[in-house]
Image (tube, rainbow, N blue to C red; front, side, top):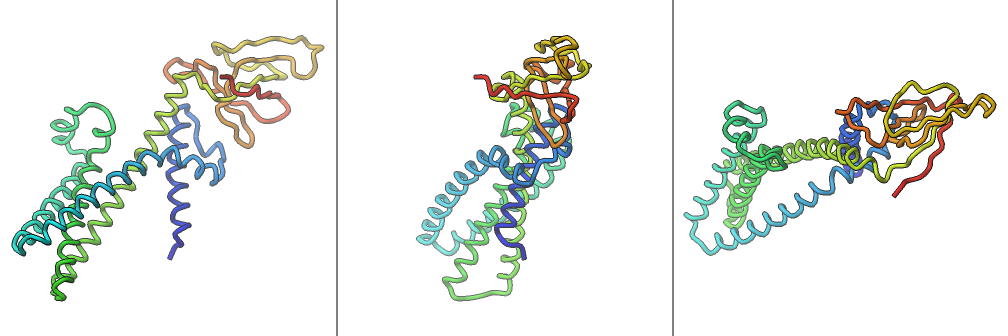
Length: 285
């Protein structure tokens, strides 16, 4: 058995690594080349998890309140109505769950008739997950109503085990769908943040000045180059206004302020050795 702390740390690491991998893939950088520590991945997981966890908390609270009101109303109703509601929830939940599992595979009728008519956004992106989550939640509620009724009657039936197995399956599918949706959101959030940084000219990231022994074989806009003459010392060439995108154990990843993947710009990768000297200028406002 895994300790709860180990499970939580593993989930934070996974979502953080998904976010960082997606972020740097926008610039054509492999996250594995950065050699980040596990603590770095975990520290970035809040960017990927805050919004979906807040959304899940609000939805869970709403479901609990609605289910509590439904259960109180059924307690004052007849046994026949309770049975019909329980079966209705179970049937609708099963249909929605199976439908959600089918649309996860992206059939043509789903993409052409449903998805194509929706505006781009979170609803369109996560509609299959929402269908599965709604269906499994309805199924879990049906199982709870059934088992609670049996406990009040102090009676057990052979079919109760089937209900418990069904409830376990619904719960497992709910967690799997939520895990998939959160991983997908972490990927999309990393990509969206990279695009936002590029459009904002990397505001908040440190600028650097580069001194090099040899000319840097890049011709980038917004980067000024100055030849300081041979008598200036070992670092003859100075480059201004690079933006530090990432720093690994042996490399600097630099971009110019107007870098964009569709503008034929390049991420400059410099070795962290005595062939260059990199001065960090701080974060401009």
